[in-house]
Length: 298
Image (cartoon, rainbow, N blue to C red):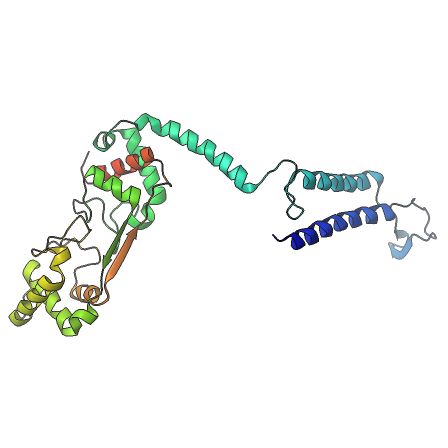
């Protein structure tokens, strides 16, 4: 906040509080009894019930004054007057960091019970699986589903097909550092006819769907030129870069003719967010153990 704005806010707040105090004191005159006094507002109900403009009772007035005194004390101790930080030096960031440090320390102590254990060992530990399942439900289920079976564009974690590998350390690395997979669009490179040829080749070669031999042969050549670098000549994929296996039926975006041609035409991408810095290393290991257990029947 600029110094001019800070001065404007500080002066404005102080004047406003002092104005409230003046208003209270100015209206605290001695009460005058009687319907004919100058305090009579002229409002009458039920023939003889008159409204008098008398000041507040002393106890009520004193309560208002106490709130004003409290306001000045609060503004002296805590930030509220522009850039003035207050005598206590309190900030919401400072309080958050202090409370977060306490929570982090407690979590560190709790997860220390799993320290030194491997992921396969934790996958057999009921307590670790319970905690891992809770963390999964809070942070992973929104994409992979509460049953971890995924959806279109989100991997199924309960089978044995893994884009980046399903070994314990592979899973841990995916959770820790995240993943970012990209299938580039080939519309400009292959053209509409080329896309149809490659799609026909993939379906006919690895999915048993008959296709025009001419299209299959042309698609094979284009596949080797543009696709084999990632998916391999045999279409088995590459777990190092997350290139999927094209020879099975477990496809992230589906295996229909329309889907294959759309992905070839427009490309596809997906991001698994990194949890390093969000979860403690031992917490990540516990979640990895839970995920590992889903496909290894511990």
